[in-house]
Length: 66
Image (cartoon, rainbow, N blue to C red):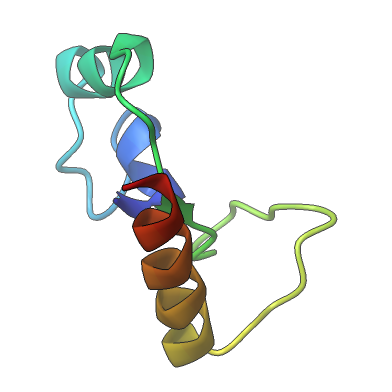
């Protein structure tokens, strides 16, 4: 679980190295990601929703997966 930025090289505040982004991307684990949009990244087709609503949806989805 986390921001979609964890799968982008130098995502977040530059903390995601190519090795980390690759490890997350190729992992067979389910990835539940929040569409937090910062900087020059725009996720088209995803409405901007307040963070508390995004977290609520994430928790709901994670409980359904369990």
